[in-house]
Image (cartoon, rainbow, N blue to C red; front, side):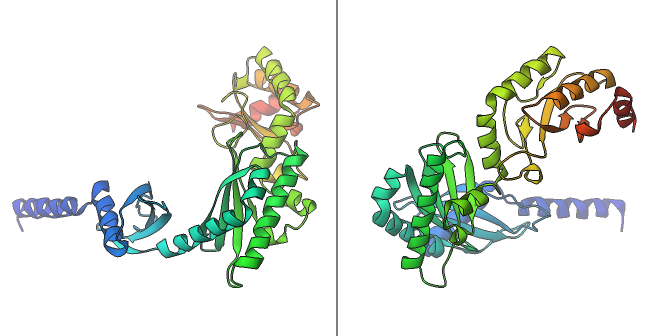
Length: 323
């Protein structure tokens, strides 16, 4: 076969592959036509899961019924080059919606008194998920809010026992706090029958614990920030708590009974030489209010000093940096 023929075949093959590729609009239309044909209503796509080699084209799109009730449900697709719809869970989500309407009808006065709103159920592979918005802050620092949360859990458990078939269950409760923008989940709610059990479950959620501790100890964090600024360091993302784009976080393994007993990780910007880093370590070790375990200084090079309690000299830091 001549080089010219090889080139022609390659061009034809490449054109075939490219022409087979679908656009986002093509897939959206495929899904919308499928929903319209199967259920007789139009739907808006609210979330698209991308296809890649990792999932071999198996992915899920979330759509929402355009007319009321605006039920959200998932459409499952497969295929790398050409998408094919495998099915959907509309009927499961419709049933969950109807149960949430029933739940709200029976409990509306109590829910309003407890500061919970926008309660709705969604179906998952493990059972029902109860989603709710709290208009008031829920925190360890406000015992009354924990009492209200416990009442909400008990209401959900009573509803499950009285109105759900024995084959159904509530997998979890997800709460979005309108005040703090924090979302947290309670799992195995059938085991939550008293305040101690609720506190134990909340202690298993690092985000909830971090949020409560940060608010309780905010003044101490502010004082730490001022001390760090004196030696040329500042929190990378300001005085913020969180795992990803924030500056301070206490991981689950370092939390005991709602306290950061193992110490926080802090992300800082500032000098990266051993002398200044050792001065930084000493200030953080000497802080009596907040325990710091690890230091991360982003950038190139990335500096990570773990277990600062074990650091006793600038030379020790230099040896770490030279590795």
